[in-house]
Image: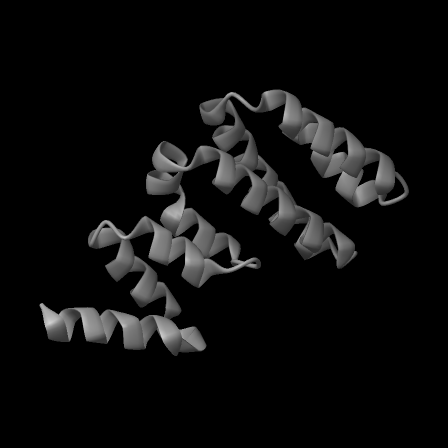
Length: 132
């Protein structure tokens, strides 16, 4: 047990890009959602977010919604078509978390602000319209 705890700590302190997904899987398997979320930080990839989403949406839906919304906004600011697609992925997850947390008003207000702030980005707005 002591070695296990030491190994988990060492892995999370120096995750390295190639090992990060594996470390997330270990934390999730061990029921360490808080450590998994801490490892994600403020800018998780969509893939990483999708790894923690099943547990996080049950245990911390409000936190997941806000993390997804921040990530979506960061992607839209990149002003690239691929980033817009990823932003929609984050927004889709944010909506699911908002529904679970009873925060649909907050989600809808965020999307409305995003729509207004980026109204000139036709590609993004088209994707946003499909989101609903």
